Image (tube, rainbow, N blue to C red):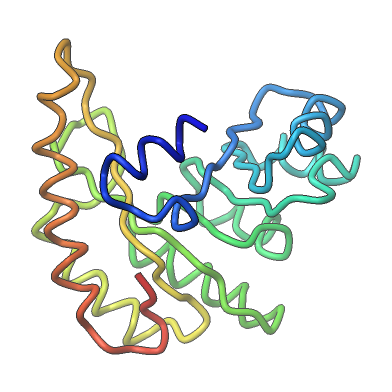
Amino acid sequence: ERVTNAAVQAGRDPSEITLVAATKMNDAERVQAAIEAGIRVCGENRVQELQEKYEQNAYDGADLQFIGTLQTNKVKYIIDKVCMIHSVDSLKLAEEIDKRAAQHGITMDILIQVNAAQEESKFGITTGETGQMIRDILASCPHVRIRGLMCIAPFEDNPEDAGQYFAAVKALYDEYAKMQHPNLDF
């Protein structure tokens, strides 16, 4: 209800909004209870935890997305289990996702992580690097579909102060959403 109200206030169609429930640090039983209560998309940020709960059928009835920082050597463990990988912050990672997706005959949806504040404690590419990364992925990764950009703004005492970072990423989104490419679907 709160998501619907916020969407309407922002002039958005509530059906365009996807609530991703971060299911990390919850056991399989609690994840299933959340799904039974109406959650349709689960997000995990640790590969080992995802694998354990996946084997316990924790995500049955929901889509599963990987929302954490992902190392290239761990892609092979999740590629056939998730429908989207957030936090792609390098061409090397995108190329590994592409390679593993090709082996499974799928195209993997991704979000590119932009570190708009250029915080050293956070992963992601700079706003200035984003365009080149999009072009590089589109040129070399036929089994990867870029679905959007994501960022985690720095903590601010006044939440309104974080708006500038989201605005910078939204401006990039608007610029590249105009591009026509089969593997770019913002």
